[in-house]
Image (cartoon, rainbow, N blue to C red; front, top):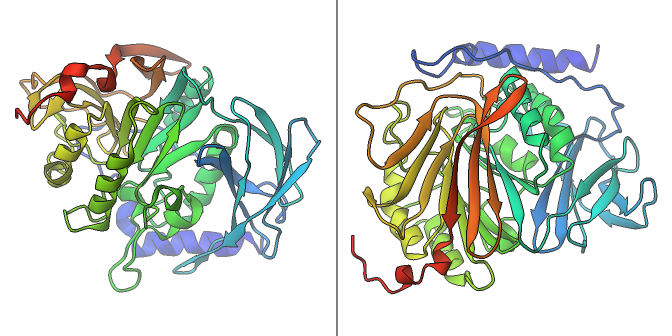
Length: 432
């Protein structure tokens, strides 16, 4: 009870300071979401909780977790058989304060080199339960689960169960993770909720607006919780910020952009993106995928135009680099566009997909603009998840799976051809 009281007090104080969080930030056209799931802490204070893994370079994994107790070891023991840990790695730890909330000890340990397509068993901090993960393949085919605006509701649990029902290699999340919105205990609850999934497969995430968590004067700097808890491989990709980075896996170069970091042509993010795109070798990584939060193309009435300023600055870079697909979240619905550049259909532009339908607490954005744009080929306001299965250097399959309570239904699917294999797209002058 003594440990629980400060967290309850912190939650109540936050609600007092930010009463708007008791209400949906959504729209009158949204149907009610399912109830919030608060996942309690039920392990010893020295034991790891909120365990999740992420990719670091070609053959390393970062293991992250939190302990309630301070001064615990930032170590990971691992090996190829249950209970047989023949390797030990040491990392770092941090913590943060947010008003009256104090986080637990947040540990990050990089392990490797690791073999591809291999199951490893591991233990964090020298105590607690054993976990296991499988490293991604380094060859095609590879499958990505793509889920935006996840949250922690009963819809979230349904989405994660559907994702887990079919194997995949890497989980991609284009922003809005916990929907804590300054209520820091909800970050802890979210970490516990996703641990059974995020401890088994790499989760690669970028930030959304619900990660900002600023407050005028008292807490002017954003992303404190997000950056401390969800450390991504930004330094390895030459970025100076955890809010944007890139990584490569199995012939695919994936760029995670920051919708809420500065992005004008003088910004660090813009300069980094130019340099990152210039380094891509399409012989080595024939597929290029981008994730960001606020969509650049959107025919839903929700969040109209919020991604336009970023699109105007950066779209030409992605088009000239022949990016294959751009995934976004933010809008709580599903929508798939044709290949687009500068608001016109073009066979050499990226395919744009919005997947902000993971299970957030705000409900769905039910209203689309009418008449529909000819650029928008499929749109539906339902919760669900997507899967991008890249078969080889030239072909991939995208499918969107609608949540239907106990099962998942494929509601939209399309075959894609990589732009790297489409020779006509590499001999163009700027025709648009």
